[in-house]
Amino acid sequence: MLPIQRPSEARIRRLLYFLLAGGTGFALYFVASNTLHYAAGLDEVPSAIVGTLLPIIPTFWMQRSLTFRSAAPQRRSLPRYAMLQVGNSLLIGGLSALGAELAFPAVVTFCLAGVIGTVISYIVQAKIVFPI
Image (cartoon, rainbow, N blue to C red; front, side):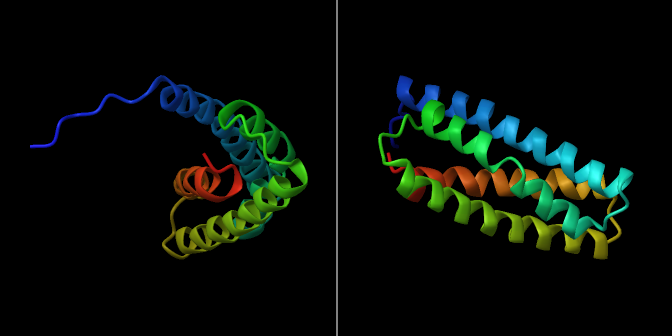
C-alpha cells in the first residue's frame, strides 16, 4: 500500500490561482459564447470559438503571473499560450458541434466543453507553456 502524500503548499497555491485565473477565463468564455449564440444569433460553433479566443490576454497574464509565477520570457510563453488557446478553441468548437448534433442545449454544451478545455489547458500550461 502506497502512503498518501500531502500536496505541497506550492501545489495548493497553484491550484487555487488556476481556479481563479481559469475560472475568470471560463466565465468570460461562457458569457461571450452564450451572448453570441442567444443574443446575436450565431451558431454554437462560431460562438464557442470566438468565446474561447476573446479572453486570451487577461487569462495569459493571470496564469503567467499568478498561477505559475513564470520567469520564462513573455515572447516565448505568449505564443505558446496563444497556440494552446487556438487548439482549445478548435476542441471546444468540435465539442460544441457534437453537442448541437446531439441536440443538447447550447448552454449545457458550452459548459461541458469549457470544463474539458480548462482541464486540458492546465495540463498543457504546466508542461509546455509555463513549465514547472
